[in-house]
Amino acid sequence: MTPFNASAVTNSMRLQSSYCLFLFLAIIVAHAHSAERRPFRIQIVDEQSGRGVPLIQLRTTSQTVFVTDSNGVVAFEEPGLMEREVFFSISGHGYEFPKDGFGERGVKLRPAPGASAQIKIKRLNIAERLYRITGEGIYRDSVLCGDKVPLAQPLLNGLVMGQDTVMATPYKGKIYWFWGDTNRVAYPLGNFHTSGATSLLPGKGGLDPSVGINLDYFVDKSGFCRAMVQLPNIEGGNLIWIQALMTLSGPDGQERLVAHYARLKSMEETLSHGLIVWNDQTQTFELLKEFEAKSPLHPRNYPFRAKVNGADYFYFPAPLPNLRVKATWDAIQKSENYEAFTPLKSGTRFQGGASELERDAQGKLVFAWKPNTAPLSASQQNQLIKAGKMEPEESPFRLQDLDTGKSVEAHNGSVFWNDFRKKYVMIWVQAGGASSYLGEVWYAEAPALEGPWQNAKKIVTHEKYTFYNPVQHPFFDEQGGRFIYFEGTYTNTFSGNPNLTPRYDYNQIMYRLDLADERLHRP
Image (cartoon, rainbow, N blue to C red; front, top):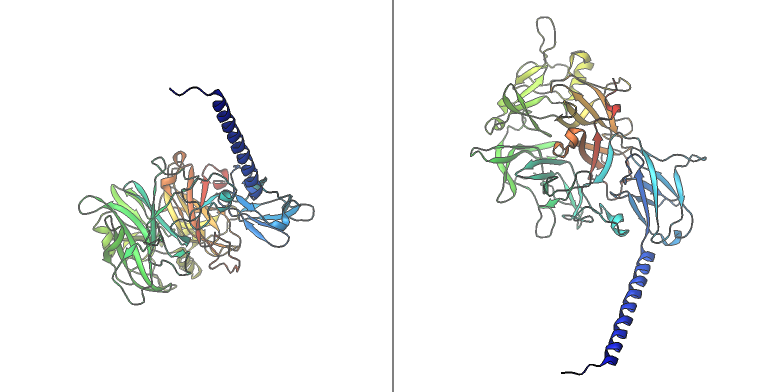
């Protein structure tokens, strides 16, 4: 037995104690050093909700611009501007900071490493901007400041830099997401044959929609979003876009995912279009049915299902809900099965001022569901009104500004039933808005799909910037439909604005709308 050595034990304990003290001091020094190296954290928060506001610009007097991330955070670290007073001008689409005595909208701050400042801003939009869904650096500044963030991949996901126009629907227990053109990190040209991802549903492993969406992209060997549509090659068919995602029973009774595709040579020339069906094994879309080249009767935009007199239909608003087809495997594949809610004579197409309208014996304009007849867009309807072919009050689609009574032309958007309002609600973007092209988002509701669609309220403004193809996601509805979520593509395209917003441009942004807000329903 080894004899007990009290002196050795004492020395050992002293060494351990010294080591622990050294380690403790090292941690303190490292932490202090880390704090010194951390940037100055500036957070802009919505004074109504208290949550961070994305897409707010802070500008110094040297015109250096910083843009808040999805948590409303800017990580400020300018070597020459630390530990001194710095003035930041503050601005952002649909939000406003008060003016000072000289008319400047901003604040003085004294940036210091590891310190922070929180600034409240007034929301002018009725809808609340929540976060950016796609692109690089969604939570860049929050990560730099050491904040906890909700996304699994907050900095870069699927090597995606930008994505255009989303289509999304639940399918086999997940949400399937598809986008148009997708920009990559490694080169300006990216994926033009549709990209895709899945996410888990809220309450079933997915994030709360007020927080974010964890996208799981379909990627190639390089990690970049791969093409989602496999079609025979056509010379010049460089673009493949999809829309009208539908889930329905296939011939075998199993749930299938179907979409409409268009192969384009350019934005002005379509080479072919038709239906594609999702292959669960290859995880790509394959050709199901090709339609006649110039047929206007086919799935489009953001469909929804509704029962009418016991029959199940798909409706295809754009954003007017005036095209439908029975929701069966066979019916969706034949253009003659599609019906339009239109005043045109049965079997005719829009021909400008020469269009043939149907009137009854009393001269009343007949809006009805008619097969083999073209639906009218809002623009076409306005052309008929200007040509004296119909009066505005004859149409069930006579949208007007709730505040001014002025006519509002709907360009594109979505329609879904809302349990909270017990009505159909429409979210759409205005064609040629007052402050920007395709930048004004509106809300309207109607007791029936056939209308009347009348009172409209502007809910989002983007100043001199485009926000197109907005779509509501009813699978995210909360509190029985009181809170609804919608997103759209934020881009300078069509706006004439030469200044692109870093990281945000050509990406998707999520908004939330409270349908209990009295401003939406003022009589």
